[in-house]
Image: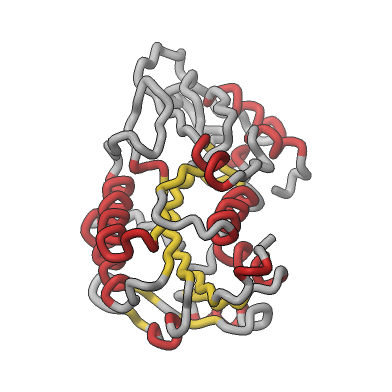
Amino acid sequence: MLDKTLKNNRIAVLGLGWLGEVLAKKMISTGSNLKGSTTSPEKKEQLSKHFPNVEKIKVEAHSITGDWITFIKNVSILVINFPPKRIPDIETVYPNQIKQIIAHTPKTVKVIFVSSTSVYGTSETPLKETINTNPIKASGKAVLKAEGLLRDHFGRELTILRLAGLIGPDRHPGKFLAGKQNLKNANVPINLIHREDCIGLIEAIINKNCFGEIINGCASVHSLRKPFYVKAATFLNLKLPHFDAPILNSKIKIIDNSKSKEILGYKYVYDNPEHIFLKKKTE
């Protein structure tokens, strides 16, 4: 729940998608003064039935389509919540999209950038926010470049929230690998976070006015990949995934979430991702 002292903040959520729409609904229900955006005119019409202020905004590599001036006007907190598209030139396009936001947004606006733990590489030790980033995939490299651009512009007004793999309603992990064959890395730990905790962390950042930080968002329990996804598929009565014989892995990825608990005082609802199996199967 948003703190009473922060309800007067005008919050803008750039991207009312799977995470952003539910975040916005939660904030509005607790009295927040909020506006949001979508790229689709059809979804704008749909969202307008539930949200008082929805703008059609599309951030492109060389321009912003839509009324950004109205969208950003009088905003005190901007939540940037759109991931890079899986396209060949992702490492150029996504940072350029972020540059458009920077060029049209005052430095005084506080920003929460919904980032990703894909900016980290593998490591023999748990990955804290202070560790050197070493993304492997192009998407991780694109997001890391975006972080740097935002940090250079907004400075201490920016908090980067690096989220692990997203799960929740309509993203049940039982569907991720069901029926797939010859899967690798059977014995590596997984890093997941439920949508309810993503929303909780964003609210906590706002409530505590916690800006100028980098914060990992991830469940504390890191189940091994094979037993977790077999159990997840079983829960939904789907075809089980098949994994190749496990091999030793000295380099793995375990996201450390201790900072989110310490500076935000946040208590994860799904601190063990397997708790999703206790919920109804429609999730």
